[in-house]
Length: 395
Image (cartoon, rainbow, N blue to C red):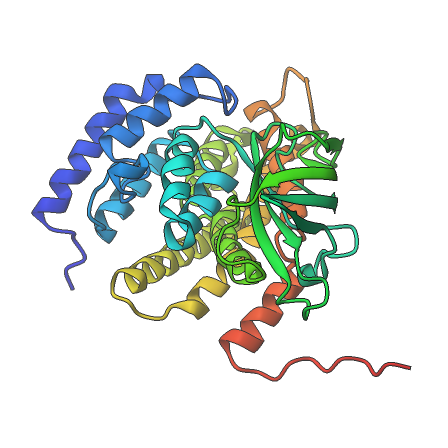
């Protein structure tokens, strides 16, 4: 069996490796999403086609034809080199593909390019205090007043709301309709009067989540994506892309390479951690799962290009990805021994504390974005056709 990609693709792999060798020093390392090095690097990657590769040029992307093998080669080489493969997040990985599918031409031209370039940072207004797992029971309202929607309500667990320029937000526009039918999907600036953001500190020590309050927030009528009252369809497109983002196999592969490097460098009783058979076995188990995760990603990409159904393959991504990352980060902490207990500003801290921070962050993501229990229900009911869990009788 010949598993090589062939001459054309190996030549392309050489081009990618040459680019990384020549430009890796320009890649940002923790400079924040708005710093000049980050934005310059993003612009360079778009120009070369190493990010936003297949997004049309008229919307700010590179404009290349879809090619699953070239996409895989790019992901592999950037992960192997542990070099940033560009900006991601809710705007680029969730809203942009949704606008390409559903948005108007004006919305595509207005928002996609600046979002790809990092000029617009987005947050997602979905969860509410009483509408988390049952998202469709949301109560944040939007009432049409002339040419504007007037929004009132509250969102919670809103990532990057403090830094965001814009929000994509689910609101209830038809209060008398069935709960899945009366929802609309609005886009509006976070500078709009009537918006208040309150940061929430998590166990990582950072305020990655926020509460957001809306009081008579006025939004232009045309800033709705899809049709009025059909926002649940748009929301599910976003959620599908979110699950892929939270279980990104390329990010996990890059992190695996960093873990292997760590285990080769750290020692216990003058022996490398990777030479300890217990740790090595745990590493091999994770390595096998990362490999399976990457092949599943290729299955999904191939199905998209060939107009085939890979819905079940997509359903497992978030469940597998977040639980695997949590175990991967946990193995690093165990490999560090007593140093794995360190946090914040110790001089003996490894990786600027990223192993400890990511371990706790992914514990949160096992819950956020749809808990593992909910993901298993989705897989069993929608993917495998199993009967729905019976609801308790109302007393």
